[in-house]
Structure formats: C-alpha cells, structure tokens
Length: 589
Image 1: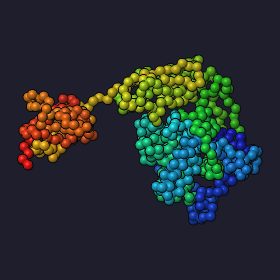
Image 2: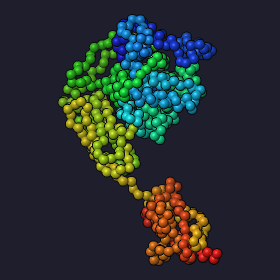
Image 3: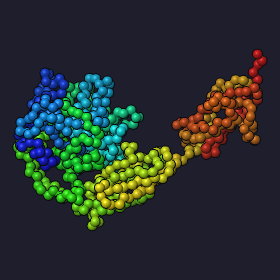
Image 4: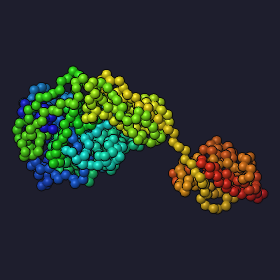
C-alpha cells in the first residue's frame, strides 16, 4: 500500500511536510456543531489524536481493502473563493475530484433525506456517505451504474480468506459475491453479505434490497452509521461510526479528509465520468476492487495483495522501484504505515505473468450448455480462460459477458452484460445467472475486451416450471351445504390439495356442476357461479390452491330448481372430489 500512496503524494506535493500541512488544513473544521462545543474527556482525547475503541462486531466491509487516494490540496469551492495551500502550484478553480456522478450523488442525498425523517437525531450529512463511497469504491467506479442505480458490473473486494484480510467463511452461498467458500465485500458501499443480511435496505422503492444498487447501499450505509443512537454531529460518534466500517486509524483519517473536502463544495457530473482512484485501470468499477486499489493495512497492520494487471500491447511493464516516502511514518493518510515502525520498504511491482502480446484466445472451461428451470438460478456460470500466443494464461484481462436472445434471464444485479477480470490462472467466471419466467433458449457470449480473440458462445436453456400436482383433495369442514331456490349458499366451500400427504401450492383445480357421479356430464340447471362479467356459469377452470394448499370457491348461487346436485372438483394430477349441494324450494311469498 505504501508505494501507491507515495506515488499519489509525489504528484501533488513536493514533500510529506506539505501533505501533513494539507491534512491539518483539511481537518481543521469539524462536522456541524464541533467548533464551539466541548463533549467532555472523550472529545478532548479525540483532539489529542486518540481514536475511540471500535465496535467488537465485524466491520461492515469485513476489513477489506479500500482506495487510499487523498483529496487535492486545493479546496473545491467556487472559483475565486478557495484557499491555495502552501507549496502547491495552480489556481483555485473547481477540481475534477469534487465531481460526483449524478446517480450516486442523488442516492446519497436521498438517503440523507430519508434518515432525516426516520432518525432526525442522527444528523447524517450526505457528504459523509460520499466520503465513504469514495474510499470504498471510487463512487461506484466513477458512476458506472445503470438507470436504476445498479452497478453495470459487480464491485467486489478481496476474498476474505484470512490471507492479509479477515477470515470470513461464506454466508450467502455465493449469491452476492459469487464465492461459495469465503465472503467478499460487495457493491458501491462494500457490504459483506452477512452484514447486508441485517442492514440491507430498499432505497429506490423497487421492492428489492440489492447491495449492488447505489440507492439501496447508500440507505443501508446511512442506517448503519446512525445505529445505536449515534449523533453524527458529535465527533466521538462520528469516529465510532466510521470505524464501524473498517477498524483502522488510517481508514478513519482518509474518510474524514474526503468528508471535509466534500463539505467545502461539490458538483454533479454525468454517470460514468467520475474520477477513478489511482491504480484502477479498468475505469468501470468492475471486477475485484481489492486488486487495483490502495490497500488497507488492516486492524493489525496486515498485508495487502499485489496487483497483476495486463498491460496494453503498446505498454511496457513498469519494473522500476518507487522511492519510499520520507518523514515520520505515523499512520496518517499522508504518510501511511504501522505506527512506530518507520517507513516500510516498498516492493517493486510484480511483472505481469503474461506477454505484451496480450490475450490471443478464449477457451471454454467446463460445459458450453447450461440449463435450469424458470424462476431459479443456474447451477453453473459460464467460464472461460484467456491465453496468449504461447498458450500461457493471461491474468487481469477484461472479459465481457453478454446475454443475447429473447429471454428475461439476467446476471445477478438484473443486468444483461457484465465485465470481469481474469484470475491468475487466466480464468474468468460470469456473474450468477438468474432465470426469469420465460422458457426458451438463448446465448451467453464471452468477449475479450480490446483484443483480437474470437468470442466464445454458451447455449443456455430455461425450462418451464413443472405444473404442481395433487393426488388428493379434501374438504375443510363437514357442514352440510344447503340453500333455497333463488338465493345462494351461505357458507363458502374450502378444500385442501395434497400429494403423498404433502401440502401442494399452485395446483390448478377445475370446478364443474355435474349431472351425477355415474354420468358426470356438465349440468345445465341448478347451482351456478358468476363469471367476471356476472354471467351464470357452471364450470370454473382458472382456479389454483394458495401457499397453504387451500382453495376457497366463489359464492355459489341457485336458480329456481330444487333438489340434490353435485359439484365435482378435479385437480391437476388426477385428484377428484365430489361435493353434494342441497337446494330446497323457497316458501311462497
């Protein structure tokens, strides 16, 4: 992590002393209500540089990596009103880093408004969500989201397998993060699946709680920050809330620096045009966030994981050794590292395991034909392997998966296309496929982005749902059904469908008035139903049992015929039940 941050600072300041001055200026003003208040010993400890003890529970992002870029050392106020910090060239015009993609900005402000109404004592500023969103995902990869706010491609943190990060075994069966062995932080606000299960929210009102949707994720993050009665205008509560995301002093200081920066002024930019944090060469917010961002040293100063990126054909791999930052290594965002250990010795970048020629061929891994039943997920996802001209695997290559054809099947996140990066062995697995209700066959195409390799096609089939069947129908209740002519039966008829003793939902049932059990022809007189146009009918075919396997028939009316009649119920699967209906002559008026 240190080499990346060192490079970032050398672009904006001549020495780490200037960076320290910038941090002092950026943190001089506090959240609303800080400047003229004293919140007791705990606040005085904050001003002395002490952080509150983090919560004991797992941090919201699992303690995974985050972007360590700092805001510019010129405040983003309106032209002519900003303050140039010492040691920096340039004017005071609005900075690109102050631009927030439109949908992402709208999500933050919508979450602030919702929590202002539901939890006014929290005093959540949307700029805090923006600061966390910047650090966690680079504002959803520069605003790479669809019209509904869902990321075009999944944003995933590193695998939380205990190697440099927390050890969190799978809690969602891979539904959100595509990993059935370990969890990974997911989406614009980087929720681990187990945390999302508790804090997930529906921020855009579509009835779904999706961590890949920036509206849902922003509202969930705001709700988490406001938990436990926190008042975010109080410095200690603010720090504790941020540390709940990631138990790291460096993380806290980085988020606070962006928080102060955004409070000084922001502007809206179109989706997909936001500034991408340094080190992220994809520009799309897709794939493994943890592999191309600044690394979080973790709660105990753990290690990050080095990136293996695929250079473009015209690029040469960087084999130079970056100069380490100078000055005291105290763990601040401007000069990172483990407190008291001195500046770490940076490692030279790892040479990519592929040749400069890049991907020359995509091959399928596993079966090329996939199938499932309507309304369910596919057991397997399309998978390909990228190799170069020498047949060696290419890591870090972009592979775009697209769903082609007349189908309502979608990738996880309800998108029709997604771009993923190949792993160290050259393989790239598509996000989980979720079948809709439409049966049929379609194609999933894999393409090497920006390469000459021929695309690979997978054939996917969605089979119709099997029709539920019942081998038995039973009436609920045994009260005799009687009515007078020209009236209706006072009691409604309810039956239950089962198959081998198991309750069956959604079983189609037909109700018909018949002449007799021995001669079950449809009757043309006696009791009847009303159709949707209020016309008398003696057969109803569009009936189904509910989730409890029950079916309550509509009201049964009578004509002027008295006698004993039969109602036959026939269920899909062969179950038959005859119900006796008795009609007596109404007394003369």
